[in-house]
Length: 332
Length: 286
Image (cartoon, rainbow over all chains, first blue to last red; front, side):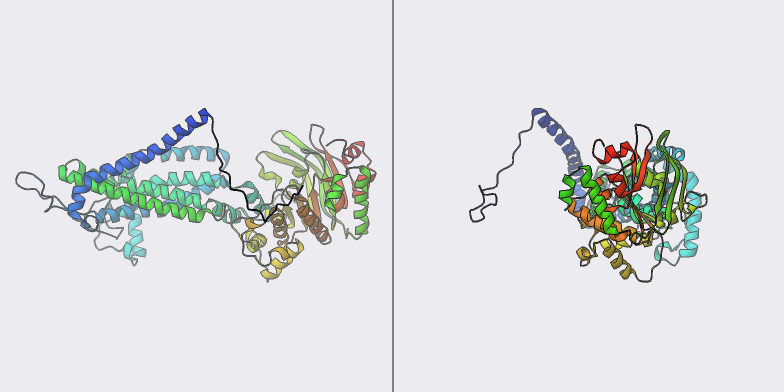
């Protein structure tokens, strides 16, 4: 009997590995697959609907739809919209959407991360329990309430902060002011959006921080680490990808937010990078604003705008996924 | 060698291992005095008393092994020595731990300074996966905000003392998680050494390792014992017999864990005073 394989003979063909699952397993597999595919199907149907509806306008406008900023509906005497003479451009709205959402995320991330760290590592049990419940409630709050609160309470304060920013950082191009209008600016909208997404990012960050492996935390403490040094060396590297993921979820919510932004932002059909001036853009709010009084052709243009928002969200989320997978592997 | 001794569990073989280990050391252990003193340690988890009245002296420059069946409080006991016990929610303690004559539980003590002097190696190797091998070894300096003149020298010295230098010297910038389990554990030992502790607690450091790695770590312990006090919890009696100068036997009769007997390792394994110790070291229970 030989134990060592004889290398001179050819190796056998690799066997096909098969498995015949039981009926219950196959049924569940079907149900789960159906559930998984349904979201994809719904997404696809929305995309097809928007593309189909917006096709006419997109064809007539061409690239001008995303590079132009005019929104002009020309009607003939019979009240029929003249598609060739009308202009539909959403560049200002696209830029405005990204601007407001970016401001929101920049404000929200540090606050959320600090809040999550406090809740995970510093807060006494009682405070922790109450705050976690409150934050989860806040995440599910109707956005119109944020909008109203933002309009009546936050805006006067945000205006003061905006003036401070302009006074001390006015030399930065995006804090420049050409006219003295501080109300209803992208900055104010960004602050309101930040209050909306802080609970989301906090919730996700807290979840991931609390999963930090205990043996690593203990390893740091056993080396004479302070709590802050332990957080920096162990918790942040472990939770980084989760925080980025939460921030991207917040970014997505901020980009798609309609009502809250509608109440606190001046929609102006001109690209504006100066975040403190009361002139901004937001895709979702624009669609809401125009929808009520739009004729059939303008509706089609709004559908095309919806398609653009859809694709923008898709692009941002894909970038987010790449970032998460890049930051994820290290520190885990 | 590891395999052959581990197969035999007769009392004579154990005591002979202990005697051989003792003669090898030839009283060379630099017992210069008591480095760490536990006085009347009690420990609770919530309402449950898990340790009752443990008093033990640990002599400088010696290795003390703590043996006993699972759940008898050995790990809890050594975690009270560097104040890691209090991390567990609901954990409480009574008694004193004197480090160079000063109670580590004295109010106003900076806990981080205690843990710098009393280092710890855990049961499961736990290197920081986001750090390279070199950064792992030097992690303590950053975490405790210590300054050293020459980091490279310290890195090499710690890895040499932990018996890992020759295996990793060419890949110091690889991640700590890329090492094998035994190497990771030695990396963790090197990491503990970098902050220059006076005392090293080892909580079953070899229980997750293969015999070869275990042997390497036991050699490391022997080399370290000349310069520091080591307290090792182990389930492996052969290991206790091989590496330690003193052995303490813990036991719980369903209630809190107690220290049954402590003495020179050769005595504990060859002529224990307590019948329960004898039953345990001869393998009649546990």
